Image 1 (spheres, protein in one colour):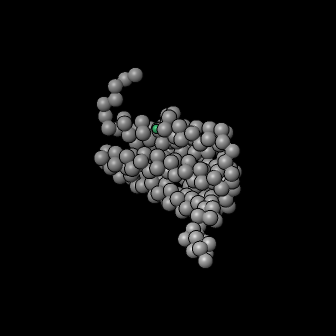
Image 2 (cartoon, rainbow, N blue to C red):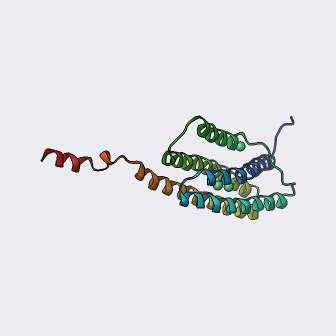
Image 3 (cartoon, helix red, strand yellow):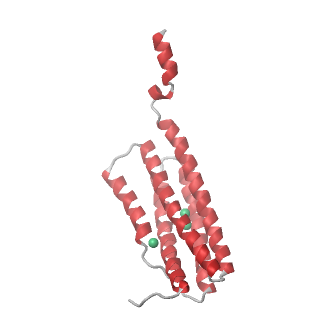
Length: 179
Ligand code: FE
Ligand code: FE
Ligand code: ZN
């Protein structure tokens, strides 16, 4: 292993990491879409899959901008999120509602990871004077932030439906019981 000495080398490393992550997600998102029992959630994954394909093209353009060949580098971060999701689904038999809540959590973890990675890449690109690349990466970041908001909203909506009736209107039913 040779020593890494320049900010550009670090940028390239993190770019490859994200390229690997996005490619992995093109395989994960269809799986999440099929695991989902909620139409809105399934649709959200399908449309984020389309966005992810565009994000990969943006990354390829960034590689071009800096004169490097587009290639991935194994990212244990995204692999870990994926493995944690898979083992939970294998080891547990969550009800449909619980499964959907869990899936939104896996998606949110992924989006947070991507948001952190893109934020770092954008700052590095700007420091390197790579403004065009920063703009492309900002496009991806914006989509990740919107995807996060979407799954959070869906999660809250599903969680409302998981509330047992007894705790939904506790004070009212208690008042009734006393009458
Ligand atoms: Fe992405
Ligand atoms: Fe990584
Ligand atoms: Zn994403």
